[in-house]
Length: 419
Image (cartoon, rainbow, N blue to C red; front, side, top):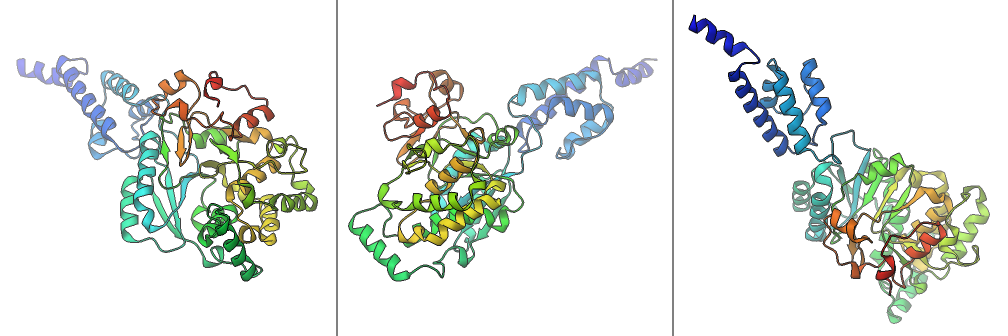
């Protein structure tokens, strides 16, 4: 009788022995969830899978063997509780946006880009596992691939830039371009004598989004070597962009060096005259021009950080814009940067509501810092930047102008961070 009673006790889901057994299972599952490198599953989905007998893909054989047994209500509650406790509400598993990080780097940048990757992973991507595309005008070596692939939680892709995208076009007068570089060197214009910098600016302006590795993606987040992210990013910027129909975003803005773009606006006006249909209504013209489009006021978004819609860059509107600028030769006869090129395009061809300022994303690229305005926001996001270093409201920043043009309310406390 005792043995029979024992048998039924072992199979009774409400028995004390099964409660203990299922409790142990719950703890094992909790350990699996907390140590897994996969995005955390939504508790409701997993509980539903338990009840229907289906297992969410990506679970280990240990967890599958536990789920394959007949689960009691106690196990279900334990699992749901474990998931709720271990998965931050702002980072549930869900279908990621079709997006990637993209970096233009050389093999010798390996340790500087490693710092950037670690910052991005620790502050954001370890919870989302987005892919990362690396592009180089030379072939990446094994060390670069090995180190970066170990740091990135998503898939890594390594691409080579076609020579025609990183060389002087046939229509460029080499002697004239060389004289410009010599003159800029004498005037001590930053990167004024650099050929590679000009190739980089032209590539970032008109070609990076055409690389075959980016064909599969809809959104990109540009990351450069040796940058810092000071705060937790507890939301998905890619998803924000998609859900809110944003096409371009920034965290820093400033005035361009006038010596590098003396005729850029002439080329822009030529584009506007040739393609008036490409100019958006209710755009940000007043951000980049203080006189209704007669001249360029030099304001631009700093493009070493940008999250954007790749399909906008692939559009005929943007391609027509780049073609007009490229044919005028200013990337080589002057020293046009990709930042003013991208910024002017976004200001003219996108509606105001399609451009976004990410106050929440704290960022540093030498020598400028964006540190979120507002003490409580910095505390909530676990920031370690000094608000006194925030460039947003300083005299050489254009962010205040952006807020005024877009009739946006400036964050509480911004006055304390002005010059």
